[in-house]
Length: 332
Image 1 (cartoon, rainbow, N blue to C red):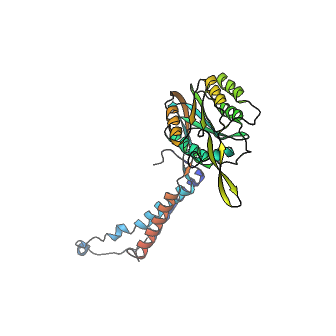
Image 2 (image 1 turned 90 degrees about the vertical axis):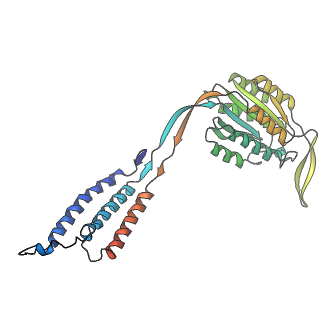
Image 3 (image 1 turned 60 degrees about the horizontal axis):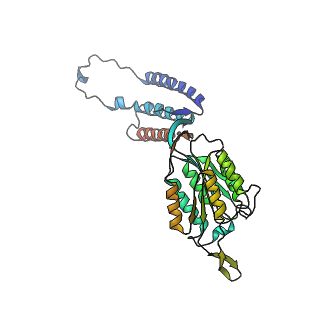
C-alpha cells in the first residue's frame, strides 16, 4: 500500500500511542458500567436468544480507532517519492532553430510562414518520442526557448507560445545557429543535429553564418537548413488606418549561404515553397539515423494525504450515524 511512498511529517506517527490508551480506557469504562446479579438457577435463561448487538456495540470504538489511524496518516502527509530512472533509449539530440522575424508573417504558407513552421515542427516532435529535442528562436538576436528535453509536452507548449516580436527584429542566422550549436556542446549523443529554418538572409548579429557552420563542424553537429517561402513575391499583411492590407514583397532567401552551411556540416539544404513541401522536408529529416543515448527520467512528488483524510471523515460519520440510530442507547 505504501510502496514508493514517503512521509513529509513522520513525527505525527507518535500520535499512534493514543490508540492503546483509548483501548485501555474503553475496557476500564466498560468494566465499571457492568453490574452483577445473583441467581439461584440459570436454567430459565438457557433458551434465551443471543442479542447480536452485544458484539456489534463495540464497532463504535473500532470505527473511532480506524478513523484516528487514517487521520494520523493524513497528517503525516504521504507523498509519492521523488525518484529517477536511468535508462537507455534510441534517439538523437536535435535542436530546432527557427526564424521569428517580421517577414515570417508573410502568407505564402498558410496561415503564415511562422505558424505553418510551428505546426509542422510540432508534428515532427510528436513523431520522435525517443529523441531529446530543444528549441532556439532568432530574429535580430537569438535565445534558447527550451533546452534539450525528453519532456515533449513542455517543449510543445513552449513552441506554441513563440510569436513575432519576442526579440528585436532582424535576421541573425549566424547567431541562431551558434546558439543552437551551443545547446549541443555538452551532448554525449553520437548523433547531434540542428534544423535551421529561415525565410531570409543574414542581416545582423556578431557571428557570420559560415563561422557558426565551422563551429558546428568542429563539434560534429550536422545542420539541416530550410529556406521557407515561395518563388518571387509573397503577400505580406500591413496594418493601415483602413485596416489590414496586403503588399507583395520579394522573397529574399540566401540559398547560397544556407547550402554552404549544410555542406560544411554534412547536412542538407531544403526549400519549402508551401505547407506540403515543408511537411515532406520534415518527413525526410525524420529518416535520420538513430543512436543510443542515456536518459534520466525524473518523477515529481505528489501529495497522497487526501484519500486518508476522506476515509477518516467517512468513518467518523458512520460511527455518528450508527450511534444515533441502530445502536442508540447502547454502550459505545
